[in-house]
Image 1 (cartoon, each protein chain N blue to C red):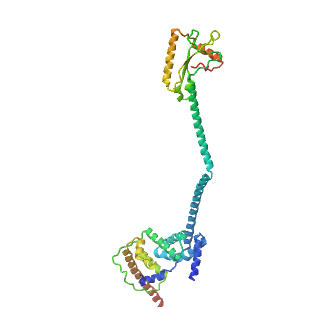
Image 2 (cartoon, chains in turn orange, cyan):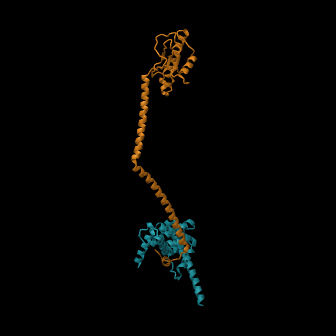
Image 3 (spheres, rainbow over the protein chains, first blue to last red):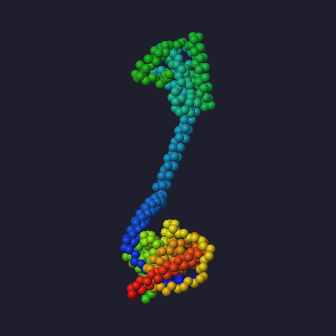
Length: 227
Length: 191
């Protein structure tokens, strides 16, 4: 409750006015302009962000086919790759199963023949390890096959029928590399013992190699004689 | 006549809401003199009063969209201006509100038979200490209750009452002194 004193001041001052200086309006205008600028700036930034985001979203929504196609193509490619790998591995396994023993193809001039006893005409013994099969893949190494071949020299082709004795190790999938090597070494030792005892004749190995190269006309080593 | 004024104001306010600079200028010209007087009552220094008015009108134009034509527009602006003046006082930490146990609030002071103009009365109020001045302005001129004043200034309600009684007493002394001075001047002139 106001007393008379308060009422006096209220009546005189409540509606009182005082002219403000002009600089106040200028300052207010400047403040408004600054705020408008900042509002414009942030509005533009917000519009840009929203526009870009909605654009990306809309693009994805409108082009689901391409996305699906990409996904589908990727999946098809993946499937194809998988199938290819499977088929390759299957063919490898089949090949290995179907060819448990690698028979070394003799040269044209040489006619291989399975011979029962070892004859004195046999001049050279070469035991090779088929590296091609071993180096196919690392996993293939376990099923490596080692074969030894006895090749007759070309010199005696005309005189005597050449013969090839094939030493082979069965390509048993379960056989490990070590066991295969071990059996090959055993067989080689047996063969060496035979040579030493005189059952098998031995010809100079170097000469045979040089001749083989000369006949083929290439620097390349004869694939039938692998070292 | 009052209705015409209100309709005109409404139009300008609507334009001001849309950011029309001319409408802003109109609102400023119409209400700034009264609001500047309010600022001068709360803040003794002219520069502080100017700063408060600038900030208050900037806020008015910024938040004019929140005005829903419920209550008078002048009251809405005045509240913003008073709050701005109070926040400026708080910033300056110039409010020294002392707790006084006795508050002779009820005693009715004699009605001052004064012919002083508003500007002179504002000068007298400006001569009061900040705490006295603030409470007196809020209670006597703005019409706030002591509880509201206590909440706004973060003080005890009794403190508000005691500040008011002190302000009244001091104002009366100042007013009487000014009256005597005026009479003296007038007497000298008559001689």
